[in-house]
Image (tube, rainbow, N blue to C red; front, top):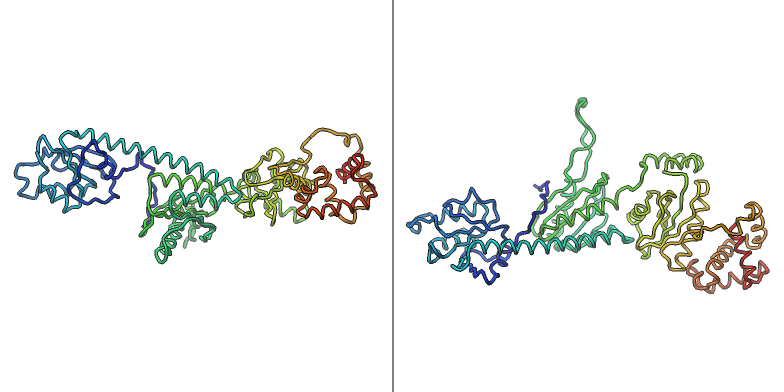
Length: 512
């Protein structure tokens, strides 16, 4: 059965017995018992009781000078009984001090330790037990410091991975690397959404994966079965209580499962060849990050968004449903990933960073509708174009602004470009809006039948006549840009090298 409670990380990790034997100034020597390098000790304890069982917690190196040993002990079962009780109590090693009571380690004690597979250490006369205990604690302190450093580095790398354009695969890769195993994100239906790392091969790997998937079901919230009789007033039919984490062990792997805090049924599973004290902390950090990445990050409920969508589909104007979505002033953000990888979870993470759950994942760009009071900031791994703040009735215009801002950001290699970033009143504000629009339609009428020409001219002018940057912004060849600009000049019958002509055309394009 899996262990459904994971104890907190111990204050100090255990240290290998071999590390203590390697401390030269102690002069310890193993004279009986197994020499397995995996034997570890948690602490040192001194006792001269003939039966130390009641005083041991398990994991100890028990130190004794043999004061309790009777003179005729070698001819009976005293040593066998003594060693068996230490093993039964969970002691992992016995240290026997030579002098002042005994000149040598009793041979019957050596035989008993060999019989019960208990490592027996000879402590030489110059070495007091207090020095052995101090060496144990020093080794533990060093191990604890190394473990804290490992956990800190893992936390930093996991946080950095969560900010990448592909945050979920990146977090899983980092987690698998840090625990030297395999990390899996399971969806609400139990399927693997993403996985990273390598485990055992062949039949053992299949068994491990099946066991890990089974452990994930243990922590996934499930609906309670319908009662056979009407529920009593005090009964609840919500969800059956489920543990938030669980562990299990299969041949060759230690398994852990963590229910993510979204309440949607996502589970993180980890399979590792060994379980170090800091692994639970590292996996818990990854679980928190994955909870943020897979959860809903918005100030309004999903019911409000659903209601707004239904009202829009039934013909309500945007301004009438904007209150359900969180505000009356909005900006539209167009975001392009710096790498080709983009998926719904990455888009969700971007929306969470921008402060909105209103996300549209298009093939080449992610569009996010953000309340204007949440100022969009540059995001690692993304190039952003941000519109001016608008009322809901102007969302389509803001969408166009964001697209143009993103094109400019790509062309200038800027992480974020805002539409109208200068923000200063200009000469255009001196002309009434209606008159400016009429002038723009007349001025640019020769291009009206070809939107590609209009957009090329707009982008080319915004980038100060740069052929290369305009080509990047429009994702076309620079020769195509040249041909379109030449065509614009011909249709407009204008000299586009003339600054006055460019200024007037820019004025018109801004009001078109």
